[in-house]
Image (cartoon, rainbow, N blue to C red; front, side, top):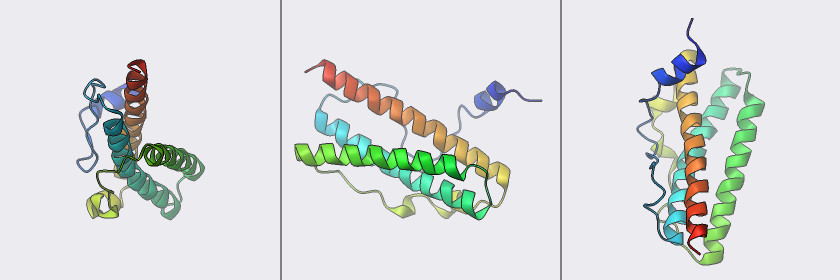
Length: 144
């Protein structure tokens, strides 16, 4: 039987092509406006994905509806905080990410195992993104 570590390491190199690739370096952002714009843009991708994850939990009688709703709520709060910070600083977003960015290939998944892998990859990368956002703003704060 596979251990959790085996499952995780087996999926290390996998990622969803429609999601932005999260940089491992926080030093590439040196301006506050860039930090806000990139964070806002990236979070929109994950909000679209989480909406589908929650919908699938409901449609397929998933056992984690409450947990996905909580994650979606926290993501919405973070998006609102970033957007408010942008408004306060008069920073305009580069673009708004549209619903269609997540193609049908990633939405209409009948097989429960494939849905679970899709969900795991999205949640794993969301955690990476929130860590990245925390680090870029901490890095910016240390320069002021």
